[in-house]
Image 1 (tube, rainbow, N blue to C red):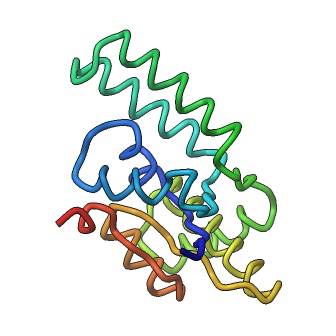
Image 2 (tube, rainbow, N blue to C red; image 1 turned 60 degrees about the vertical axis):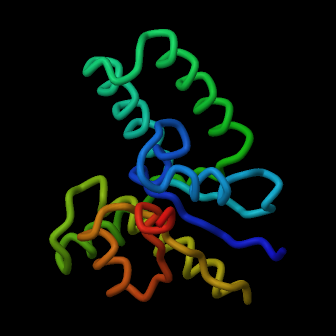
Length: 157
């Protein structure tokens, strides 16, 4: 099996930690045995922690599960995810994307991170990445930007 470079926005990433439609497919995709390279924005840390905290507040997970999931997520951030820094080129691309697509700020940063990394991979003679996201508006923008993509919410069917 050949490995793939996947960029996970937070809507895809959170499926690894909380059971949702698409979680099974995400679990298989991010399994270290797959050999896949996993990219995400450093801002995904904030977004994912927010999603986990919201689930704790809404009581869909209890305090012990929340603490466990935060610990596992932090371990994965250090050992399995390649974090894309939010630096000048990503910020510039995010601003450009906001001018051309109807996106929220963090979504623009997520997409900009993927677009910048995709261009870097292709410039190095490597295949482009696959953008994973469960937000239809963001996927439409990703497609318009020429990215290959999958919606994990459609992959468990």
